[in-house]
Image (cartoon, rainbow, N blue to C red; front, side, top):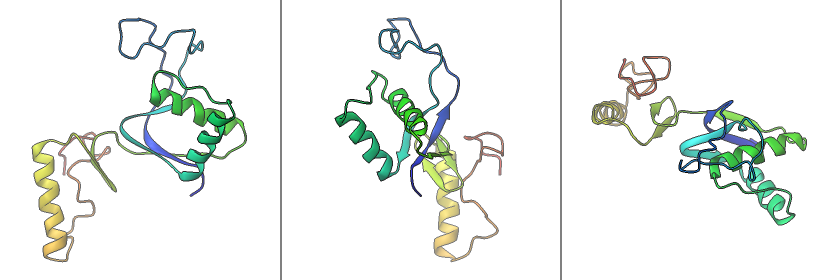
Length: 148
């Protein structure tokens, strides 16, 4: 997929202007009252063509780097879209496990359940009726929920 950006996204946030906060963003660096949509948490993905676009934009002096790396990437992706690129934004969870994604900060019970379900698939070569080996999905009691 061309121009792919995947992650756990925040929308409509406001910059923190308190200098003592670790996420402080001064108006001298970012004057807008709302942050761009940005991916946050332990992981996000950019396709190679997007990383090439960002690299070239930095070399040409067209992209600015903010002190908050995740917000910087959000700003760059907004600029990519404004330049005419059709960026595909794909949301996935920031923590836990949901269909197709296994990300850090899972509980011990979730890890045990995931391991049990994985073994069911591998050892018995069957899914045992398990459509999703994860032990909690966003639509089943929350991202980190154990609702199975």
